Image (cartoon, rainbow, N blue to C red; front, side, top):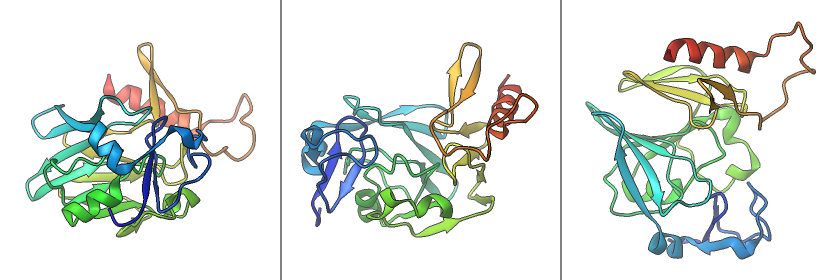
Length: 216
């Protein structure tokens, strides 16, 4: 760890090379920060099988509101969707880290160095100010497929929010929340143009409805 790096215990955001008074993501005070070295000593990353080729990665014990990351075993190597907030050097190598959006970049700089991995994110999210200390090897704007993993930018929650699909698994991070027998979209994100009136269609809501139909 060449530069000072701090982790917010409230949300798991990693601050690289600076120690602000407040977390740039959640606003928590710096009394709730620990160094990345302390974080690695206190938190390990636990792998939980989701399917034959997909494993969920979470910090243990839970690290604030950190979101899960996922490891996908493709025929040509392992890839991650999103990244744990805690750096655990015992994890198996991944060749590429794909981000759904810029809110939870985790310790991707440290895993990128450890694995010699590439980090990919949508171009519109890569320019957000909280990304300034992170390195992205590739930014994209359009749909693509990488070793069987399909990427589909949909914006909404963030300008460059991207869904990923691998075989029968859909990765949406926190774009939607479970709501009874269905789902509702994440209300925290950029405002849509204009205030939706009673006859206007909300594109995020349409995506959620389509997801509900797909997953039933």
